[in-house]
Image (cartoon, rainbow, N blue to C red; front, side, top):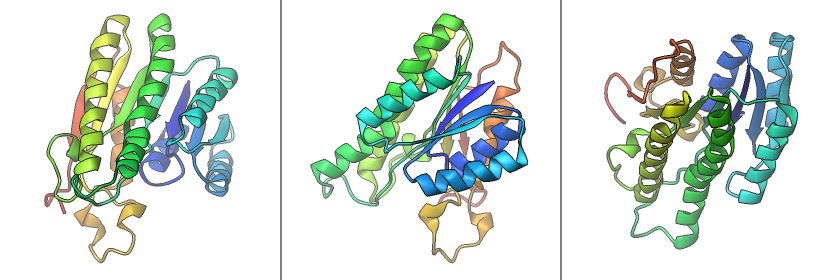
Length: 233
């Protein structure tokens, strides 16, 4: 079984990669920094020597690099069983105060990259009549968050993309799942004095992915919302 994960060297993507490796998935790990990918892939390879791990450096804001990533996966993997669109970009700013370039960046990273990869591999999965696409959305896909307007718009679009994919791929036995995490303990919260139990752990998101993959062929989890026990921060 083969899987591609974007934003795979840190946080949620890293936790998902670890769980997939533990379940014998061959991996393509994509992130922006080669050093992070090299370190993580070496760590995984030592722990799980029986799987194949490949890395690809790409900035998912750049569509040309996203397209090269898709070609790389198609070249090195006979088929892709699992696509995890995890990469994301967040900056705290209101919609009215954000500039056009900043808004475009969020749309490219949070929506356009996932759209391209989902269509590219979704067509292959449709032909093969198997596969699973996961889009890591957000609680911001459901309810606007103060001072995060552009991010919310992109995450609303991400959830909409997931729902359309779900309907189009349903007749072809391809599963599509939206995961909507609340505040999750990743590098974006670096420096906070809040305790870990005020956050969702990246490992919780990874567990959701594995549980979805382990369901029977006739079951699809359309979307799942995971929030901190004590509410949003």
